Length: 471
Image (cartoon, rainbow, N blue to C red; front, side, top):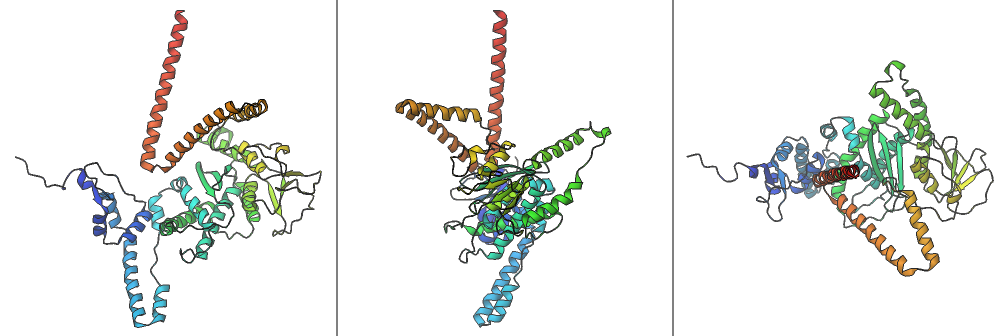
């Protein structure tokens, strides 16, 4: 007879640990444990149905063992000891000592975590979407004493995001731009990695008090270190940006000699062909606004337009900038404004949407549709491949129905279209709410469904071919 195994010693039970047990193992409080998990990139796991209990969070045993040897745990313990010293000094009434101790609190060093989580630079670039979104969000925040958002943090976020945008503009990495209700979506391609992030509009943000900013700040702490590494790796040095357009010109002049000329003997090599293709693509994007000079009026978003125009080879200027630019400059070709102004025949007058639509279609569109104070054409998302002809045909149908006075049919079609659109939106929302594990599963299921559809279509085509031959 075999040896009897005690309950909870072997099998799937031993693979998972509850949060309370994990806290006892690591000898930390809940606040520090959460912070440690965020910094190390460890998330709760879903155990099998047998182990699941109500209102309990589980972690993988290996993850907890991995956290045990982390050097940040020592700083947590040092900080707790330091807080005890501060409390003692305050009880004794020694305010000078308490102030000195507060200034010399032990700080976390997160440099090793970036290396640990991203062994190669491409890994860091592939995971740059969320850090850029959060840093650009904090860059637009006002200072808040109650929520512990200092001015130094906001300035640092602004510096990091502007350094990243400087590299994107100088190397013509920007590919897509979309104006949405949430903010401005950008997509850049750096070393083959697609990076998409959202920038809020330059409006004073009101901070809701029901959001947990402490968790956001812990994420931000790590993201700041990560983007600092990325910026330094891309630019090669830390640049203090005073004038964005001047810095872009300097970088472009330095990188103009970096283009590789491929010898005829190596032209057939696939890697060299890929490199040549990349160079041609960047050249195509850099020449969209080449030779055009844009003057911006005060009501348009200057920061966004400056970044976008410089990324595609154009020049930007506005009144009271560092170069003492004036509207009388004869080199100005386009004036970007949203209101009617006194016109000059030699110049084109457009609304900001013309810039974004021209970038997404990679050609200079006709200026007539984008005149100031005129009704603009629909601004379509470049991230979804929509057929423009279908959109135009739908709008034409609506116009015809309105002319023919068919309200019942029109309402019916409108309701059907709205229902379809709502279904799409709810589906997309559900997809965005999925966590990484469930999203992978969902993508796998979707892939299998697509493969099955292709197989069915092929079989149907074969059937039709056989039937036609028999006839």
